[in-house]
Structures are given as structure tokens and as C-alpha cells.
Amino acid sequence: MDQWSRSTGLDRFLRRGQAPPMSEKERTKLQGRMEEAIGADLETWVREELRLDPAQSVDISEQPGTDPRCSPVVTQVAVGPTPESPAYAFHIERPLDELVRMDLVAALAFGGGH
Image (cartoon, rainbow, N blue to C red):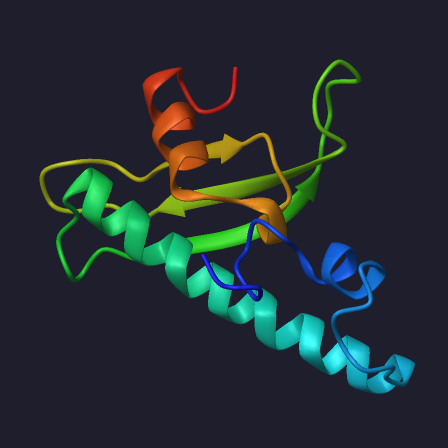
């Protein structure tokens, strides 16, 4: 994985001093671009792992965790319906910027985070 990979996260990357100093506006813009890219990767992984129909929608969002024993931020994934199957959703016990593909595999294998 390169230095911009989702497993490092922007904050950890910047704390290590590997990026030039930037304004809060530049940092916010970069964070948004990274989250868009990571969200696109996650959508691709969801489609591949679940072998989804190309017409099915996949919506991804971060939500506050509701269980105090779990992650304070979870990534919610909603998959749209097809004529043969209803819509469904699951969550992954990590913030979007920390996700790796194995987190998705584990969430699917163990029932969506719980």
C-alpha cells in the first residue's frame, strides 16, 4: 500500500510529518477527496464480494456508533433491492477512512458488525 492508502488515514499521515503544512481549508478539501476515493473503493469491494447486479444501488455513510462497547463511528452500507431480493443494510465497525477490504469481509462473515 502506498502512503495515501486508507489504512494510514489523513490524520496519521499528517502527524508523521510526511506532508507539507497546509491550511485548514486545504486539509478539509483533501480529507473530502480521500473519503470520496475510499467510498468508491468500498462500493467496488461491496459489489465484488456480494456479486451485485450492476443496477443495484450501494449507498455508504458514516454514522455514530450506538453501542458503547463498539466503535464510536461505524460505516453503514445500504444495498438497493432487485426484483428477486429486498434491500438490506449492514455496518462495519470502523470509520470510512480506516477501512480495508478485510473489514468488509469480516462484517459480511459475522453479520454486519454484530
